[in-house]
Length: 145
Image (cartoon, rainbow, N blue to C red; front, side, top):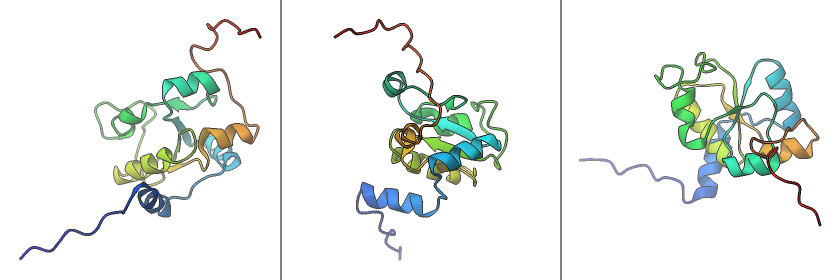
């Protein structure tokens, strides 16, 4: 006799809540401090948002659909920064929702110190922390009104 599967989350909000329950989410100032202490900030926002809003200096840009491939320390497609399973990773999305799910996924890969930025890039910017123009913004002509 087989046992029925364990019920999953009832929707995206519950899924995000479950992911966050296992994370020590960081405020923007704490994320800045973690980076200063060697944590890897990973920006998973899509290109249009980076171009529109800018990027955090020093953050590694990894598209969400490549995150696990690039950060798995034992993977053949990893970036050089993926130095080991003890690496402290702070995942950053736009508002701090997708990053919670992404950080949980990294933890399942064995990156047990992975977490995310509470409030995402928008919280970083609102805290007045450094942001530089995103790629492609310098080539845009200024819009005059």
